[in-house]
Image (cartoon, rainbow, N blue to C red; front, side, top):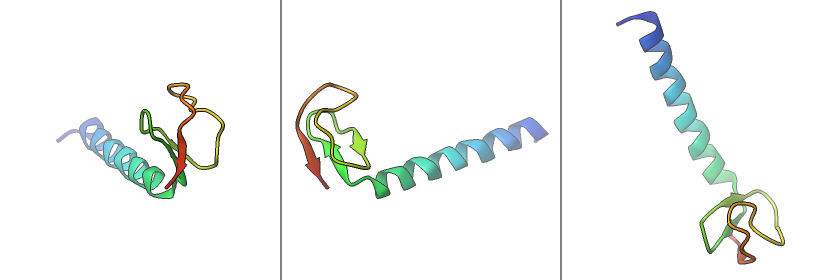
Length: 55
């Protein structure tokens, strides 16, 4: 296995770990699209919906 192949696998594993941590730390979520947030918002930045709920 080449150097860049190993590096790519490690980077992909790191990205997955970050996504998991991000989901675990989010305190609010848009009930329309599922976007996660770390604080209360008036509207979702992803879909524009106003249904933001505490998790």
